Image (cartoon, rainbow, N blue to C red; front, side, top):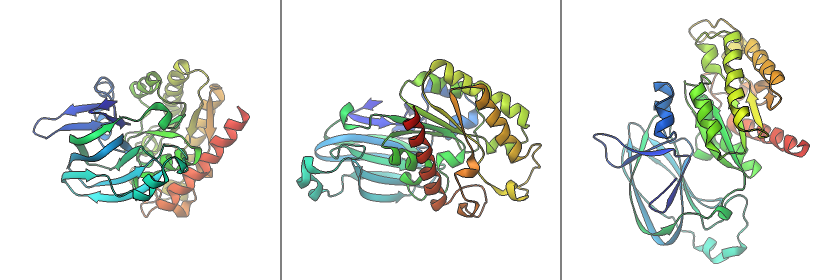
Length: 335
């Protein structure tokens, strides 16, 4: 969406919130938010791989407000990283860091995904809420030809949202998109990866993505949902997507390696095993020819988890992104 000459990427709506300044950047539009579980709606109010994109025509300053927790931010000129910040709760004033040499290079600057004149302010947070206040200066939104040709939408749990990633560009989804030269829409929802029909309908009707993946679902497994129930839910989820998006690749990524694979209990005892969940998702893909199965155990080494033995660390995120991109590239060659 475009507001005040800024392209708000991976933002479904700008919402006023009682008692808070500015407009909340949320990843779901308000109509979709009203249909999903309250926990899902809450997680979609966090700015995971949310971007503010614009082409400055002079000095530009953006005013924001961060609520509830700290916030990571990286500023890029196209694909060129300018600065990276971590903000605490409170007001934020952002201006464009020095890029004198890049400006001097002009049209000779190498381009991978984005035209170098496009400023990208990329955010990531687990819990914080980000509000837009104002922008000062002359700017315009990016043109279509200044952006990547294809877009990848990633849905999943906190792992997809990017918990424990130490930079906005170090979520596995951002890594895979970068390696493929694609844009990214991140709809990871920490603790809420339940393959909701309302979420499937929203994704199916968006029309702004070319490739889709769902990494599902350690949330359902750890909450005691049986493999059979998971299979039925996932089948319906992918059927909704396929019906409205014929020909678009739909990737089903099974549960990544985590503590239960090593016989460690993390609280409640699941009624199904990780292996049964992976097999259930494989069967979903056998029944839906548009759905392509990816074995999560082939994407991540167990030693690249963090100490909670469920979330990938920085090296784990890079590893998943790299291996996922290789699969995407191979499938593109086949197609």
